[in-house]
Length: 287
Image (cartoon, rainbow, N blue to C red; front, side, top):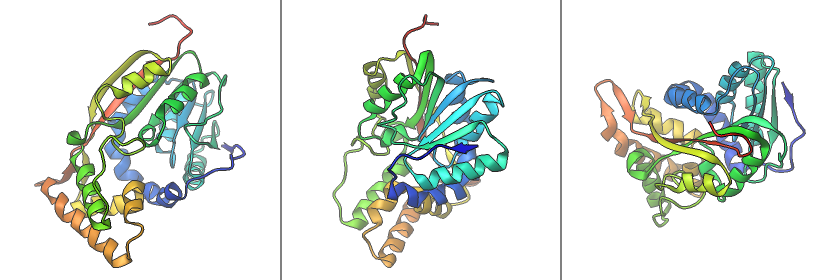
């Protein structure tokens, strides 16, 4: 596996959370296994495909893509975090996938027009773009005519109560005002009904389809879930960053207490709903 020469950018916030995300690969994989498979199916990824993995992180879904495309396919994994891509490179190298390259890149400024990818995917990254339309326009330009795009983002606030509880708790402890749930670039920014389909249409895609996908998060306890977020959840981590260590500890403990409402006889199960979208780049007959 090769690493292309990185662009001169990275994100300190996402660099900080990259190791925690990678360390929690097992529960993340269990959480997103079915949704990820649906995303790759929707994108039409198969043996020999050339695939762009946008906001790839530490490369968990990149491994799945590499397995699908096989030795005669090609995958380009991009992310804004140099640390995340370094972990992705190590994970892919350990798995023996030489058909994957990585590139440090802002999803909103890909610079891949005319690359001719057969498919592009983005798992839980598109909603963090302050200007998702720019990202979608760049993806469309990177696809061949008739190429497929698929992404997963968080759905509406009421369908993702754990995120709402943690965000409200973090803001309260940080002494910050409540935020609008659909604020651009935030966890739930693309959960507003109809918004994702409209953005795809505006970017020039065809055959748009957006549907909800249940993705409950299973953990032994709410404390285990909070331990995951406190090392991997960059948006929450950033809110609490200005607090003293004891104040941060108190905030995390408060979150765990509030989230105990989702404890079941079989363990902790946090409700989550994602939106799975699919769309086609123009220039080929519709199917």
